[in-house]
Length: 257
Length: 259
Ligand SMILES: Nc1ncnc2c1ncn2[C@@H]1O[C@H](COP(=O)(O)OP(=O)(O)OP(=O)(O)O)[C@@H](O)[C@H]1O
Ligand SMILES: [Mg+2]
Image (cartoon, chains in turn red, brown):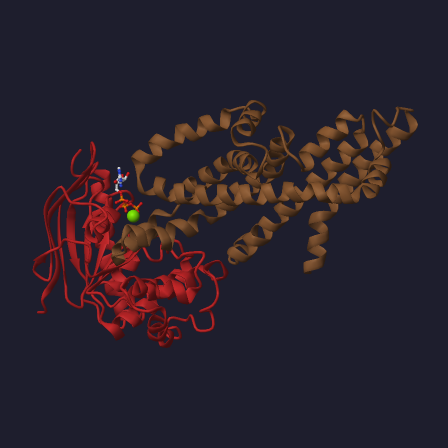
């Protein structure tokens, strides 16, 4: 088994009186695709804010490659819940943003990104503004901006949440292919059960706020998960189990009723 | 829609409205028998303006100079202060009330005082133009910085960008639409501010021209000067619209669906 890249142990966070994370423990291994699934407002994005350093945890420990996570440079590439493309920058300049912040010259950054545009379905649109692109293309641009940073880990916060069902499905398939090719280590937030099962090696299901890990699911389906009959059957069994966990807890009024 | 047709569609109604107003004014002046020294007709104003064109031009030049210089000063100050205030919350808390109070000062009272303190030259005019145009731009900038999308700020933070870098990469560009909105409000005050300053004391300028024309019972020349000042404001307004288009080329694509 490969090494543990990210580890959260009993992480706690409150905003004033509002307790948001109530001892969250999870880990991600090198080259693994892990999803966090939970109801809206549970505290999923808050976990990412702790990881990127936008907020500090009140308690617990976060380790990256065995060392405590701290300081400005976290070595993680973050994709926010909304695509956060800058409307005033062309697609090319949006995609190179992370590299420029890292100190690369604009020219070198462009040279690095340009060969990847075709793979991300953005060739010919590099000089367009975000407002000229479809939702799916915007998400692909945001994802390209995330992966070119070549960080230890990808943090994806509901990357396809704003898309229509058809575009979303095709983006999920596309991401699965890309992930297989590049073997990114990825942590994905979603509240789409099917998406989580389709993309992940493992899934953590969170309770409603204050969030705790209710259950951890393994998804031992073969890849590529192109929707073959056998795979579909197993996938729906896991989906049903995940949904059960989410819904039963909801009916019981959550773990802290 | 072609560029030309859409331009007509946008400016046509305004042109019609102005033409209608002028026509009503002309008819009233002609038919009511009101004396030309009380209410001159638009054609008489235009005719006198043409005769006096040299004098009007000579007086418009100092007004334009005061306007542009005052506006430039105010723009620079507003920009620098907005940056300081964005970086320091205590400074913002300290300065904002002062600036709000500065906006409540009646120009009628302030203009003669500033002329008294700084003389009849260019300086008091620049100061008064700056006083009336400064605030809308400052408010627009400070508000614009605040309106930066949180996700973008968090994204830059995750990339390791410093506060200063985040300001240049995200907060400043985010403020542009707000800034231009403030600029358009300011610019309409600018010419009026300059004229007011001249009215309070000047050797030359549209303000002093208006004062003299009024004292000589020449409402036609007063109105001719008003026409010149309105034209100046419109031209300055047009320039800000042009500059905005150049500075924010992406705006075109964002507006398309809603129109
Ligand atoms: N800065 C803050 N101050 C106060 N409360 C906050 C703050 N940030 C988040 N919260 C609260 O924390 C809770 C969790 O927010 P979070 O954004 O992590 O939810 P989420 O699981 O990502 O939800 P969604 O699925 O809707 O994106 C919410 O109830 C929110 O109101
Ligand atoms: Mg969220």
